[in-house]
Length: 259
Ligand SMILES: Nc1ncnc2c1ncn2[C@@H]1O[C@H](COP(=O)(O)OP(=O)(O)OP(=O)(O)O)[C@@H](O)[C@H]1O
Image (cartoon, rainbow, N blue to C red; front, side, top):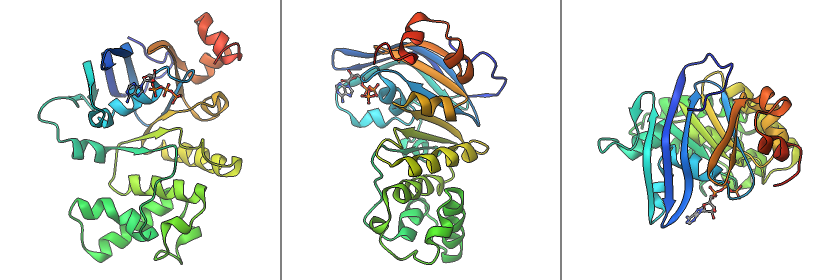
């Protein structure tokens, strides 16, 4: 079982002996780890090593990919998320996701954020107004858009769109936020804003991020997991992984010898 060494925090996500197959291709091999709550955990590793695949298993986005099979256990807050009783919509409300390309709906800024709460049965204007404001404040977008809430979300810049997508995820009150290369389509200033935002959000949410950018993982995360060919090579506190890796392959990767 891999855990980050110095973390005393509570485990929120417990992954045990997880194997995932796309058809006959074995994409995740015996992955076990405990991810602590209210911290940022980064997944790093070369292209194709399974980072996004593992991230998708955490809110069952892999259910949508045909011929995918998993073995093993993933528990969130102690409950098996692959058990038959689990309602996947409720799970995805608790485990929100932000993607590489900002993907706001072609609706107003307000309606993007209100979309999830409405879907879950909230229709009071006053309540929706409150949720929209709180979510946009949490994603540090409120001051920029408060006078233009009826404008199309598509009129925002890429970085603002990504913060809107984060607000949309926060609006349904998740416990976990998954970020799949959430800054890789953004300019450096927007990237920095999202990184600062992630730092603020980790006080309230558990964040798991996939990043191609090792510097980002080093700057932002508390724990880092290094993957290679579908296996976890090393899982440590970020500072330790980058300053004193246990495994030669980690050292080779972080020093730029491959990947
Ligand atoms: N839908 C799919 N069907 C078949 N194989 C897939 C599918 N999605 C991913 N794979 C394969 O599984 C492996 C892991 O892919 P994954 O996207 O998880 O890697 P990654 O580490 O996130 O890569 P990247 O950094 O390039 O996004 C790769 O070999 C990939 O080709």
